[in-house]
Length: 423
Image 1 (cartoon, rainbow, N blue to C red):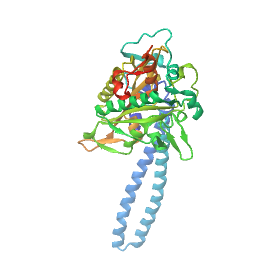
Image 2: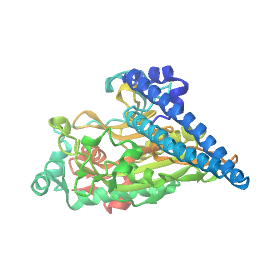
Image 3: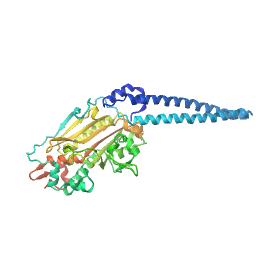
Image 4: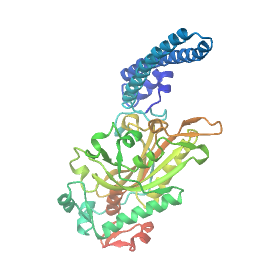
């Protein structure tokens, strides 16, 4: 969440920047400023009362030494009365801070100045394209037909076992999943990322820590009896490793990667655009996460973008990189780039990765800080990105590489697959 300091020092600037995300912050910011005045007034009064209590308490001993027992008793009674007052003032402070935090949880992150203006995905800026789009014959099949033809994925069986959006991978389809997972993890480790194997369920504090709660509560599967949530991405458990932690600046940037299953309810997802692997409720994904200093986080972001781009180059998939406009960015991101691959049989672009810099927004929720040479604790910057999400990668690989003899496996995956064709 935004820091109180940022809001109180320049509320008009905060309102202006949030308007670029098409969020009207006037009312919540005004309420935060009003509550902060109450909190500050209570803090000031509390400090004054505590100082008075300290002075009076010191005088009791002296009065007793001088034999002024009645005066000492009177001072003690006054101290007791003042202590009751401190409890009321502390309660007022705590109540104001609690109300402030509730409002801050509802205010999105401010976009960086270089984020494009716009309201929807149509306004996103294409900054780069790579690899050639293949030309397929007129009778080219979409991936759900190819999956059926070569017995790779059984969508109907998934419906029987669980429901729509939970496919069953079989034979070479399952092997392709595992090949991609291992390839992505090997590439991440080679780039200096430490592999983590986190839980795939998290508590409420973790959801709030990275901003999935309360913003995306409707998209998360909630285990109500235990009040736990299935993760929508490994970003949640991996970033929360550093909740309530003070790091040493010399250890930054921290670079973690993780393979997990991910779960998203995707309520109301119907139609041809979500057919097959295009949108699932459960899917595999490799996530890269960084914790960094404010001074170096933009460089880290560039390195993460380069890492994802190299993966797509090696998979020989046609891709494009989009800088998301303010209106299309997530609640928590300060800047975000999406990677899309072209699905040749469907003749459409499919998002496969979002790489975001959250500035201090998540770190403030997490209380994730670091200390440098001056020994002063300050908020870290957090970053993450998909490297990569598997379903749409698989969809594009199957469609783009179909031939009369079968589906050609990209060279980089052959050692993982143990074959160069799916027949």
